[in-house]
Image 1: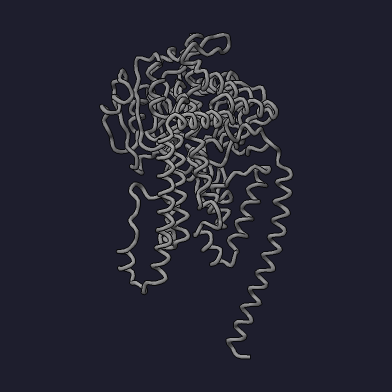
Image 2: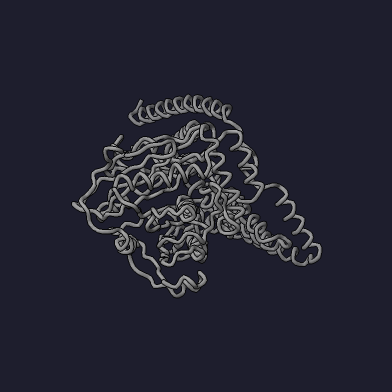
Length: 613
């Protein structure tokens, strides 16, 4: 036997051994997959799609219009057929050229490359094979042709109201995104190349990732976005020094340790949303708003909300107000020996801070000196991108689901947010994890995004029905503790920070709410970027600027046209505004007092609880 024969024989033996090992892994993974799917708890099917009546009415409207004007249907069909035939002809021509042409050098090949479509490039089709291989080119071009035809058909539907038309468009886009050729192994060149390069190992690793994600979420498929082994709360994220100085069933109150010799007399009490964990504001030292605030010489209290289980089924917004907002403000006042605090509310906590301020006004409670709102909606007359999910069929299904379990599972909210950016937060990560077999990145923001929180059943329904759907706070009033609360009664000095590309709390909708507040002193800021990056916008990065305009009597479009743009973070602007309302300098405060001793180091225990049912 020659040396070459021995090498070939050795290679064959190694490949056979790898194949046997992979087959054994596939068998084991398949068993685990069957087991976890068998244990999956079914959820209300109404959470997955709108009532079929929407599609039936859309189809009826479409065909009725076409019956009245058949020329329109023929024009659309002829256009679709023509583009489909052209796609096929171009692929055939490319194949013929490839078979007959002599090899070309790189310069010639580039010169003859097909023109790229206008507009931003579609990252899904970045692989050169989409342009160079007839098979992939035809699949891509025909997919894009089909997508265009669906969107045109939806656009042409008549006799639907604005909301139904918006919902139809949204769900049509979801179908288009789901059917992208990149989502299937046989039509994804990146996944196929990786499988060949790794002798199929990438597919085995992908199956392992899929099974692991299903097992981690009780059979519910939630794509893991980050390497969870790379982070530990309190060790390499949420590390700003502080102490838990109060704890009840709703929240832990963290007082952060001072970094200056003196501090402003009036403390800050910051309320993060309980839909997410508070440490988005303390991911790491260089982008931590929490650390930055303490470094500016403020006594800072931050609420860390409980992650509720079924025992919180009857917990309401009233409980969050009374045992969360009012209690945190009162404890902070007692610890600091002051009569007032400056309050901050982020997202849903900003909405609830507004309710709390109206309640406090009616009770004659002046404990809040000023309020700052981060991306907080208070007028829900336009529900924006969430319109498809805030109609009765979906909310009815949510109400039935939470009525059975006592909580709204974290994945419902997470899935809703993710599908607003499906290619970035669902399909792209799924392709990399399940088809390519890649380990998710060690990215702190994505780790936080996947660290979800449940919502109490009654509170979730209150929020969806009375605030989002009925918009009671901005209309007839929101009943709470025997009071009718109204947006116009928010009358403390305020600053509202919103974000230009925020798809969760659109800045124009936040602006409409601020306009209706009764404060004589209002400052409105629009930061560049979105719901998170626009808020977590550290001074040191100098990445996103912000817009300001003192005239809040204008409509939102006119306000933005007349706004002045400023480079850099809004944080210093807010601090200058806050300083005027923060009182004199006093000796720096060590967390806690004899009445409220430090009972645990920050970030406390509630934030560590994972959302499991």
